[in-house]
Figure 1 (cartoon, rainbow, N blue to C red):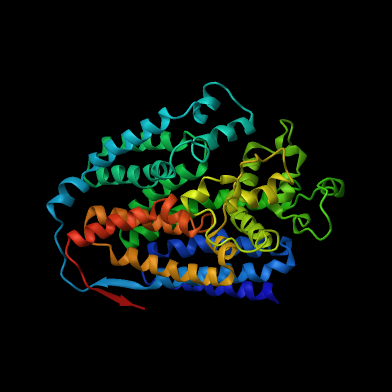
Figure 2: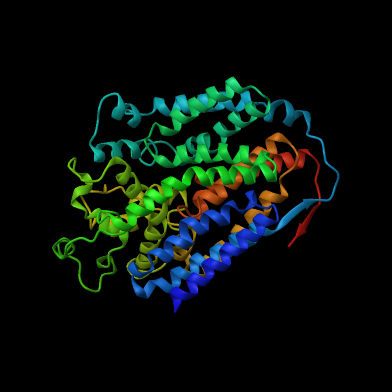
Length: 461
């Protein structure tokens, strides 16, 4: 019955997004669309593999957050006052791409100077191939870096905010050669840890900015072209997932491999998800694997991008509060709490759900970051989920209210829209706001809004 209701929700949610696209609200639907593709649909696909006693509460969290995102995306905030002028301070300094280019170079060089190993160099120059060694290096570039927490955040803001501002403002001022140079430097810096997320965020911000500048008709043509280009890849991946016994959706480990985990019958970890099954695939790490490089990539991205967020979040719903001695409240959010990383909620879930079962694949320092709904539930239960949803609506409206007609404000709006939309399936409210810099974007937009003169807004539901 619940699964049928979820199917109905997917249909209704898709129709809501489609209606907004018809209203020429297509770019504004990015957060809702990403939540649909990375949380709602994957949750339905994996529904039968999740422990039954926690599926209902997770379904509520996934659907409620989705509704809040759709509401926030659908509300139009229009300008009532006349268009205002940007002050000389904003136009000459904050609107100058060189400010962000120089700041980016300072932050990037300083960050690299703190590292004993650069994973990108270690892998492709010195030939390091051991995945655990590279994982350790990657964590030492950020999570295990011995610097104040605020400085770690600033390094993330460098990729998420500062580099895109330098590139986009250079493009808008038609300094294309400098823009290309900044793209190359920012891409190298984002890729230096070998983590996929920083480079992906940078690329999506730049693409979204270009799409946002186009007319509605051009955007539709772009969507059509992208669909046609991706269709052969999607069809090939579909055939692989359906027909190949080694695809992530078809592979099932032998009973002996499951028994070797040594878990009691009532342990929810014994019910393996699709991702868990793939971790027991013996051929995955073998050079003699019958899978081609293309098929391995299909399996990898099917889990990392599509299945992973809902899968990891399900473990949070199972661990909290049943295996954690209650909800965690504000644990791990204060600077004092961050000093004890081993007690961080994400570390506790990572150890319980992954390191204890698959010690050969995960480090002791693994942190299993959850979606916004799962983190809110772990902290305050259902009340936390409801509060998080309300805050998401408020944040979305603030992005719209603080947007004014200037290159800098519009660029910040797109950056904020991407951070707001892309990260909820894999990050908590506090992580998106602080660690990834959404509060910095809102702060800069608020400054521009104030400098441009307070403006009344019309809100259309």
